[in-house]
Image (cartoon, rainbow over all chains, first blue to last red; front, side, top):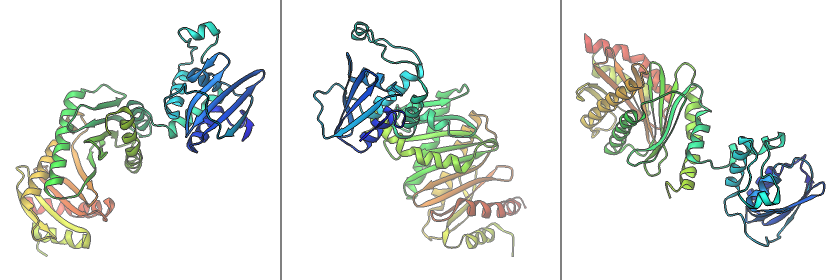
Length: 262
Length: 124
């Protein structure tokens, strides 16, 4: 497959190749410069660009918004210099792009005189969107992403009934310790009632007050649940429950990635 | 039609038809003052005790966050939906449990239709 970076950004190329779980080499040319990306079974395992190799080469290549690429299937990588997943790689690239600062590699980069990453340009917006939709963010980042999709959002937590896991996101100050103790007591009572009455497996609990909706969505793994509070006047109840359902699997994947659950 | 609690709960049961599983009026002490269940062996006392505790704990959480009075709690499992509300001055709770195939909208509509009558029968 051949193409222009104006039509398919490097982030798109990585996403498509990795989602197809391909083993391949992408040769990318931009003026007099030439870089290579190597894929193995759906992950980026090696990259080269001038004196740069590994992740730093990938980050630099992702700043190219002009040039050509040529993807050849079934080409093995000469070495393995990248071990993180492709989603994690893109996530780190987005984080660096968001910072909008040039970061120097501690030793080798300085010698090569190469800036690892330049501020985000127009072509980088695409891979930020890809990350938001497809990658598995860490729990804290995912909770913030989830919260931003809830109209009237006040507070959200990802936590355990019996355990130490706790992530939270709020735009206002909250006495979290006392609140979570009360929420956990509430959840335990809901669990106990469900079990004692043989009422099946818990999916969610929606508490409605004069001013707000408080939704608890059970993840069904290691006692984890999401707790979200939204203003009743501006929240859409259907969307609130829909987003909680949609994000259930994403939170499970994120917690797995974090090693919080197996 | 005599407006007493058992007869009103039988009407609630009729409105929900095959979806109906149980309904209880519970005091703040967790004791049921009236109940109706599709299954004869349904443990009303146990259900009543848990409903009261869930609602009390819900009020604590809402109070902590200053979210106002609790108006409803909906618990959903893969098998059923349980809706609970305070009645009248909040000295009693009313819960309706229906099969999971029932809709939240239907249950709310039925509860909206009967909650004032239930409170009227309690306070009469």
